[in-house]
Image 1: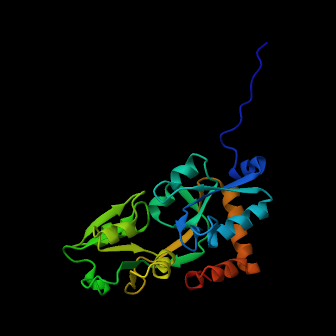
Image 2: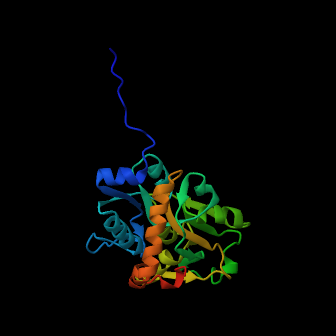
Length: 251
């Protein structure tokens, strides 16, 4: 008599997997100031999405684990099961939506430029897209395709870890780098050499949301319900105030 073995289903919903595991696994980028940032003074994680990850784990009554990644690799980590969700200020783009699902958005930011205070050639936004200028962007961020499509005269430099945009600026290999409100705010707070150039209007305006596995409606519904609850009870607003992000929060 043959015994039929029943193997665990590969289609088990992520929400059930989290509860069975007893731990929520969250993708973060630890360099994202005010969002998911490791404070170099004490090694602790802090930021809006760190607070929200802790609140989500509490709601689910499970433990919390952080998986450090970057914007070039986080979708791989969601797809291979290393993370249940990316809570690291993920910009919503059509290309990303082909691989991950997005929660309801909770922030929106334009794209800003950072250069040095001693750079006399780049004084205003119009000075960026000029022959001889090198514009740096972090690999995998929304700024990469945006600037690839936008620049007509300047050279684009795509910076992948362990290199940094700041390092490329300070070395003289790049003249300016592009980023969003939280990251450029970090630059002026922490580096006296940095100067931020505001964009015209809402250049590159991008919605930010949490990224989850595709085709898992139960898990998406749970995350959206969590976001709605944090709006209603004021936890999201208070977290934004703590981390200086009120200006870019959606109503």
